[in-house]
Image 1 (cartoon, rainbow, N blue to C red):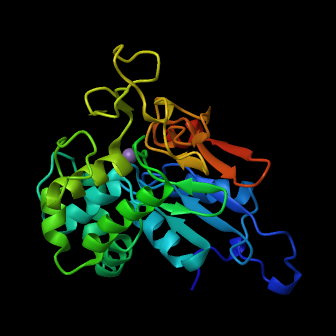
Image 2: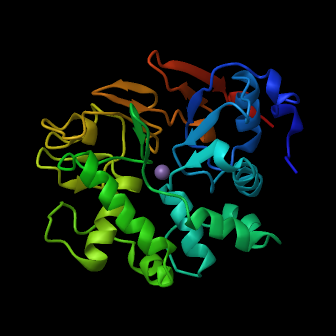
Length: 290
Ligand SMILES: [Mn+2]
């Protein structure tokens, strides 16, 4: 059963519009805004695919509905894991973290909690097609496409394996803060997770900094947004990412940033990924009133 039959094409054989892929920005439980945005773009689940940049849950009002809905879309939706999605997985295993989890409770006490958590645990950290790739936060400047794909797979394998709870227990922490091919074990896993799900700024050598999360231009002199580091190796695909609401919509350096702060009363962004990228925005301010 689909939750929203109005989103379906009732006569799939008549739905001849060319397949479209839309990347959708950080939701953080903003389910009503998502449904409204999908109406705006006339999303057709038989024909279109949605790429979610992660942080589906936490902070916002409807994490449970958001997860259920995206899971119900099956192959019509792809979601990469964000830091808040990992918080939910950690909370489900009772791993202590500094993150407040009030908004996650509705998921943790839901009758279908186990299916939802299991589904989330099997989401990737990196997704791509011929022209675009997607992560939640960033890709270290030292990694080319093959390396990025391989590193995402290392974490996915650990997260989907029997011992995933020990990964969730050891993933928190800011070190190591720079890539080395010599990294092994939990240090390597933590570094990969921090890049894909938390990174914003680094120095010109690619050393990560987690102390600063403001808009570019306001950062200390030695730091730069990860996507502006000279010599960044992924240049064969455009990178779509979220996680950085103070950056807002950004297009440049072969990247698209699409966390436009829906949760904070900003906008929810959908980006049609095609030769001519098209941007759709839903104003979320009125959802926050009353
Ligand atoms: Mn995030």
